[in-house]
Length: 190
Image 1: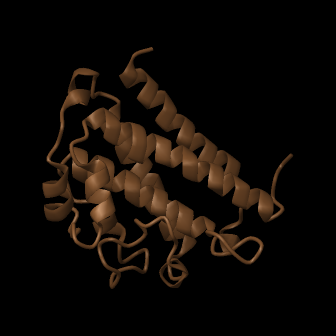
Image 2: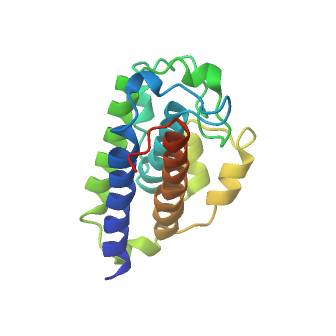
């Protein structure tokens, strides 16, 4: 299997694990619940994971506006800053406003758009290095002074890295966290 084929398969793996092992097992009315009185909520994890994937694929790689711009009002985040949900630490005051059905629409749209873009891409394009800082600022509406860690981490990276880490690796990490949350909520199917 080549790198392109691996990326397609691993993106599908992230999505399947997230939806089949977590989203289907935690009722939407519990998506804002913390387990054991702390940690992230499923709403926070889903929003965070989707925001990173959306920025990596639609903004940094494709030089398009993020899907978040289309879903912002539906998510109840019209007044939130452009960096909402990018930090690893959940802002519970913001995620508490996010309706589960709108969040599911946004997360699904992000995965759909990523798969649609990635499928026909081919391996040769994966070595292209986009001007990430310019795109994060001008397409994503972000500010390097407010999110220096993001700009530094993504600077000088090729497309393959932007898919491999912010979309797939980061996705797997947070799916694991969501599975642990599911288990701590007493919803493990095993």
